[in-house]
Image (tube, rainbow, N blue to C red; front, side, top):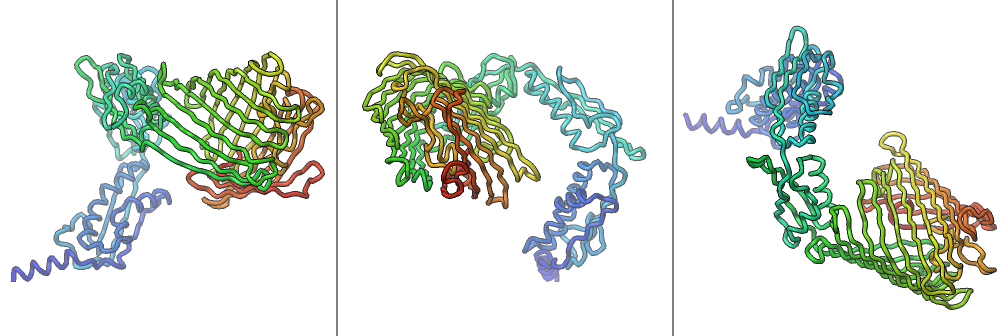
Length: 594
């Protein structure tokens, strides 16, 4: 008989007969947000949607829900609630998961929230100089666990930023006065000793030398601990692209309050290959590919080669080709400065000229902040040119300098923010028709503003300015000069269709101004539409010369969002000139135009 009872009990424990026992929630006076939060937290409610749940599981979930629901109520500021969870009319706390009922036909949760509490006594000390407590941590403000948690975090963060890496909550007394619905908070903080940085201790890397990891991270050994400095070191290691994951971990300080930092690193694959394609009914097709080595010499050095052919089948002369190689060595002289060696070989077959060029530069890129990057170098450019002015060779020495300021929220698909890049290229003629100095300057500014829910509608604007000062015209490589028209300037106008007249011959200009405006709207999470208008101005003289010409285009676009950025399809037509509204040009590529 004993064995029979044991067998029957095991059958009851495994019997999944809970279908139809949907959990009924009753929260008198509770807000929809509170009820939704309670329902989402309840393990008992979650078993409704899970197949194969046994009665034993249901009882265990109900018993666990008391503490889980109480935590939610504390989050919303109710510190004196009454919670009742009943299965078949019996309180779940009185049931044992090991002797559950044979079947559960009714499941109900009732919560009487009681009064919403307010803060009474609010004491937390000591505070590091300059610590700002949350606005909600004050006598009379609504009481809830998030504000207590945020206050403790703010105080700990303040001490850590002041060099006390081991700061923690020492003692806390949280008292609920039920009759008055008041919560008193008395929190004591233990700052701990003033800590200084020790060594960075890397582990997990396979090819990168430890000394180079320390140089890149730039952890300031001997300086007072600062959590922001630690985060900056982690970001420096991530920016190299050499590591797939980076985690810096604080170690226990020694007797002299010196803290070593452990660095757990996982290296990314050494090599990477990629390719791209773009097509325009006017500019023709373009194919590109690249090969990348992430850690060439064991010091996170990057070597990248790019190859591109463009203008295939277009109305832009013949096909252009380009080979480009870049070597980058991070942490050269200082952690935020990279050495860059850049080489480019190209052949340009344009409607008004043909040019074969080789240029190389050696320079440094400095990350001033997360938004601002500067670059400076020295370079040489060799050009073999054949155009309306005849065949000639030009050799220029250059000082390429640039600054980029990027405050976009998402570089692939910006919804708010702005971007600006200024390029200054002083040059001197080493070989040409004459000697001379000059300056080529280009400014590219972009702004983005979102509207509505999740910024589903955005305004995007772009201003491009370019000018060349000094230098004889015949000593300027045609690629230095400015043209307008095509996917990068004025959509709807043929590629480089607007130039200037130099010496009685059609050519590029010394001055350029471009304006673009777009309205971008998300139709779904995947698809979007764009309306745009572009305008361009070219002058024979430097920017400011009023003896120039302008043209414009407009159109509509379609966007398909991917992890690599939106796939772009634009249809545009000229709005000025003899072909205004008569010609349609198509542009397909990856990423927004700007």
